[in-house]
Structure formats: C-alpha cells, structure tokens
Amino acid sequence: MKKTLALALGCLVLAGLTSFNPDNGWVKLMDKKMSKWTIYQSYRLTYPYKGEAPKGVDGKTLPPIGYDKNEGNLFSIEMQNGEPVLHITGEIYGCIYTKQEFQNYRLRLKIKFGTKKWEPRLNEPMDSGLLYHSQGECGADYFHSWMLSQEFQVMEGGIGDYWNVGTAHATVRASKPDGVPNYVFDKNADRVYMGVGAPNQGFCQRRQNFEKSKGEWNTMELICYGDKSVYIVNGHVVNALSNLGYQDGNESKPLTKGKLQLQSEAAEVYFKDIQIKSIDKMPEEYAGLF
Image 1 (tube, one colour):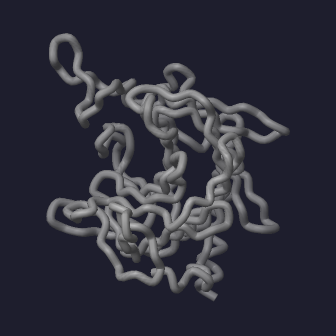
Image 2 (cartoon, rainbow, N blue to C red; image 1 turned 60 degrees about the vertical axis):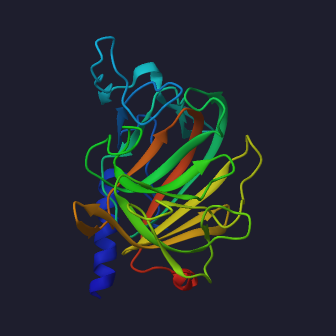
C-alpha cells in the first residue's frame, strides 16, 4: 500500500508541472513555450578546442553567455501536426534543462539530426546528448557547458553510448571485443568501473548500432530506478548501468536523481514527444542486465 501511495504521489507531483494523462501515467515535458525548461549558453567554441574557456584580447577568460538567455535563437519550438518540436541549432554550446528533478522513471523521446554543423566539430559526427540525474551548476565539464550528470549519448553512429559528465561514475558489464579499443556493453561480461580515475575514463560503447537513416526519427527510452539505468534505442537495449554515483573530493556519493538536460553541441538536432512516467521498480525484463 505504501509503495502504491508513493507512486501515486509521485505522479501527482509530475502532474502539477506538466500535462498529465491519467489513463497511462505518461507526462508531456515540452510545450510551445518551453515553460518547464531553463536555458543555459556557454560559448561559441572554435577549433582546435583543448578544454579551456575562450579568452579575450586581454588574455582573461571570458564569462559564459549565461542562464536564461537564448542568443541566436539557439533553442526554439516548431509546431508540427499540433505538437511541439524542439529545434536546437547547435551554434553555441549549452543546454536546455528541466526546472524539476526526477527520480525513478521511464523517459521517452524522439530525436533526429538536422543538416548544420559548427566549430569545433565541423569534421566530426553530429552530436548532442540526453543528460540525466543532473546536479549543481552548468559548466562542470570539459566544455564548460553542462551540469554534473550521466549521459545517454546522442551522436551519429553512437546513440546509446555512455559518457560520464564531470565527476560522475557508474559500473557497466562490458568487454573489449577483438579489434575494438573501447569497452562495449555486454550483459554477460564482468562489471567494469567507468569514471574518474578509471583507465577507460567514463565511456562505454553501446552494444550495437540500431539507429535509423539520417533524417528519420529515432526513439530513445531511458529507464532509471535506484542506482541503475537502462538505455533503449528503437526498442533495443544498448546499455545498462549500475552503482550510479559521483566523486565529491575523496568521497563517492550516490547520483540517483536530478534534472534532465538536452545538449547543444555544435550540431543541429530536433527532439519531440518528450514524456516521462513514474515507476516503483525496475521492470523485470531488465533485471539481468546489471
């Protein structure tokens, strides 16, 4: 009874801030005014980029563009068939993030890439990302643009890869197949620590590429419960993480809730049908992935 009540209350909290469908529990997170989200913009980065924030002519580090600014109309809504579609031009690094934190949920969204690319990634695959369990201020990463978080990669040829952002870390069942330099998710392999101080740093490649052709919509689903998460691309499990946490000085702490960020990362990208639903357990079909 307590578990049922907790789930119901969680759904009511979501309903207070978003459009709520009582028939299936799914909550829409995007509207035509982006009213549930906040914008952060850092810099127009240039090539080659080596991890330092841009400097002015006086040699001093330039301040980021900042919060609640939408220079260049970086983030905008285009209405298609009566539904809001988020358009991110990618020209400036930054993110749009939820005002609300989330814990224990299923998140679904659709994504497709546009055509434009910008420095410093003109010769790289188009890139963005879904960052979850986001905490603290933006600028905690190598690109001075995002919060401490875990990443569900959104990149051409790499949707479903895992990256840590800032000092985040996780454990993944992974192996290194012959001829592959990176760890690849493998539910039958040993657990590998991913994050600060690890030889592999914080990256695990998705088990297989299930992306659709460029210009088509891909469906992503993120399932989070407790200290675990599952990445699903077009209906296929591609990654699964456990022991989600972050490093705070010499202490490791759990990272099991937070805001959602959608990245602007030098590529044009579109997101739509962003929905979330509270859950009271990890679905049984995914229990053996960790």
